[in-house]
Image (tube, rainbow, N blue to C red):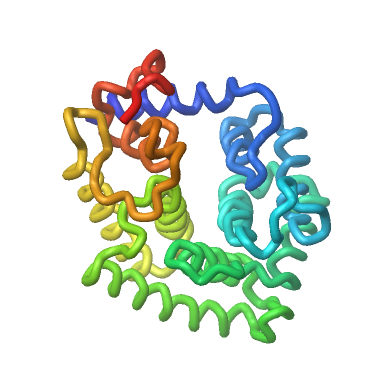
Amino acid sequence: AKNGLAQRKEANARRILAKQGDWDIYGDDAMLHLYFKQDIERANEALLRVARWYELPHPTGRDHRGEVDFAAIRLVRALYQSHDLLTEPVREAVKRFYLTQDFSSMHGSENHSLLFFVSRYLAAQFYAGETFCQYGKTAQELLDEDRAYLREFIRFRAQRGWGEFESCGYGAEVLLAMETLYDFCADEKLKHMAHMMIDLMLMDMAEDCLDGGLLGGAHGRIYEPAAMDNLGSPLFSYYVLYFGGRYASEKEIGRAHV
């Protein structure tokens, strides 16, 4: 029910906004704070750090090229969702990130491909008339190429299924990419395809729900923390948000185990 969804959305946002300590390295917490117009200065500082991805040491010491697309999808969402709240240094850093730096991952897996092409497509849409120097192409050229790629990508996955089927970690990244594409894409056909794919993925999640709360299924590319604690997985957070279930109350979060 819509009322239940609204209540779960509000409760989830409260939990995240109340978190203490360091924020995530990709900008999720910063975007949420900007959405609710809270702690705007700190949120801008966090997004500036993300936009300077290649200019600063990696927060955890990994190769910068590994998950740069994780940063790209969040920065492009921040551009569209909270542009007026971004400071000028952040806007400049984000623009430099998209127009001069290669934000494709060194990994060629399914979720990385989708994250990159959605990010680049929406960046090309935002920076119309600009040239993406690192790729040697104009925004219009990338817009045309990436639109065609994404239409074919979504169509292929709808027909053949996802290789990283209901991955507890990467499935959430795929949903983030699809939702970002749906929210900000100006092409109506591509927007509709993203909407249908989101519905298909949520249907799969609902079908694999066990006992009103446990997200079962194949879980392609699952890692130990998510396997041992279902509620700790990003994909399950989507399940709780959209479907509720017996683990949806705040007091249960973090306590139920597979």
